[in-house]
Length: 76
Image (cartoon, rainbow, N blue to C red):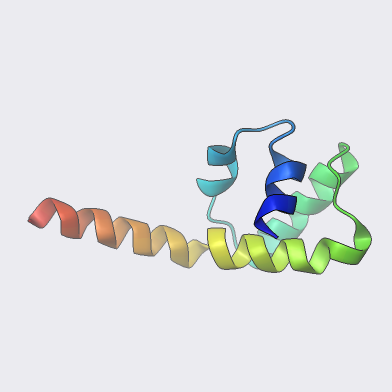
């Protein structure tokens, strides 16, 4: 799914715009609806797979892990 999400999203945004958001599943769902309405290629048949990928890789817990890792790195 990484390639499909990247292809759909980076036509208008750079990848960091997606990676920096850390949204909940519901928020990603709303964002997918919005972006599809603006022309992003998110086929209905793959919407759940897009949502699973975004939530798993860019959900709120990823933000917490990144913050923990950064603070751990600074302590060294």
